[in-house]
Image 1: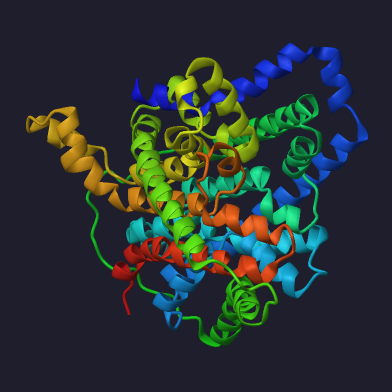
Image 2: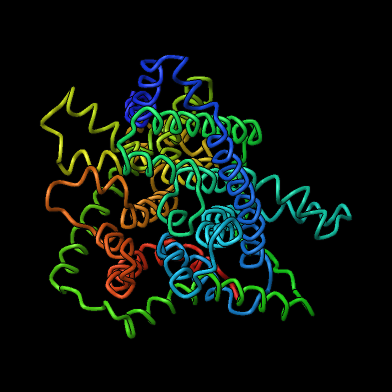
Length: 497
């Protein structure tokens, strides 16, 4: 029942868009959707999403293998570097590139920048899965005469499927809803077109029809990920043997690998951070009110903490149902939580405003409604991590706890939650980072007078006041950095020299 309640909350924006589409009528839907502009936006969205997912899968998986399976020098440091891009919002990354290199626009610039911003979504779950794999599987493969590459493709990669597909799904869903970065890069997609419709003429029919197409894209992604994931189980039956995995020596590949990782770090970190430093020092519009900055930072911190805790708590029953009680109902419930993440923040906000005014007027312009918007938008980040953690937690331990007389609630508290604690922490950190940098939903749902770092940054950067926007961007990075660092702790403890 708890999971169903969460699914209903996540489906509110979808219900709003669907209801509006039905009320408009089929003739109007055809007129607004079946036109050349929609085809152009669809082509832009599909090619950007497809290219970014492929690049993130390759970079994330390759980097995770290097950190967890190779004898790469300085693995702990490289792990922190590979997670650090999460602390830099995609629209701040775009701000860094565009403010220093105005030519970094269009498809090529958009593909480069969103890939640099989103590849950690694949790297983190894949690295965590590699740490949790039983080394005996690879040892058996080697004993049967398989080499390193054959062992990776036939033994390791299939075990990484849940984490890899979950990370790719997150990347794709975020790209469907990405606004700030693509608006700065002047690359039109459904999300930027929806925002332009609302901003220019508050054109509800056209914007909602574009949102309907986004919902269909999200549905296709969810079905594809579900089919690719299959129904295999990945938790081992026995206890296994806790021991470090022998690391592969890179030999003469060491220098090229280090050079490649250094180039990745320079593009993902040095350019945006260097841009912030440049505009903080030399920007002509660097004058800002310190009190306003502190107030915005405090608002962002408190809202993000509340949203992170709330989202993870709501993700636990959904993830538990999806892994421990597989079936058509659990699949529908879990899949339902992803739709909100594929819709632009402005659509989610308008849905909550419309429903709130009609059903619960007292919630309008309150922190509760704003947090509900954050939960709907970022629930997949928590669900993916909770599901991946539960998938590798042996269910036999729950059975043992029940046989010892523990109730289901006591088993959850004393056995299951400690086992999936790293997944809960990773989910909370990802939601916290996303909330700190959320823009469009905050603009519509925040209580009157509430300013966050993201809204203040956007108000300055939208007017090309790069110097005035830089302090707020820097504050967002500093506020997100501890949460990003939290994501590296588990790996640091398990990394062996």
